[in-house]
Amino acid sequence: MTEAVLKLVERIDELEARLAFQEDTIAQLNDVIARQDADIRRLLIHMRELMQKYSAISSELPGGVRPSGDKPPHY
Image 1 (cartoon, rainbow, N blue to C red):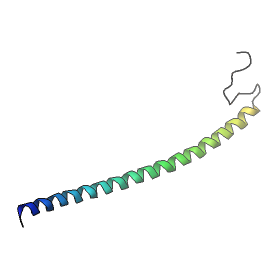
Image 2 (cartoon, rainbow, N blue to C red; image 1 turned 180 degrees about the horizontal axis):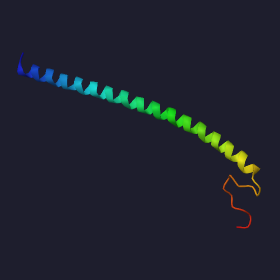
Image 3 (cartoon, rainbow, N blue to C red; image 1 turned 90 degrees about the vertical axis):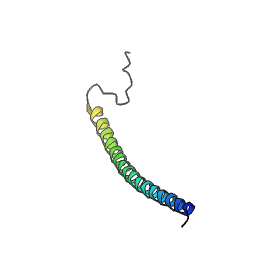
């Protein structure tokens, strides 16, 4: 083989190695994103449950705690 062909083969090998590394990195990132999505969905469900419990508890308290964060009328 000529020197030019050897250089092209080396470049192709380097590009193939980079591509394999990038594909592995993309797969790892995809796994992380999938786990984070599941975590976010689970946290949203817990947050809704907590908000419902807070509303139920605050409505039973005397004097009425304002879950909306509104200031009492004397402010």
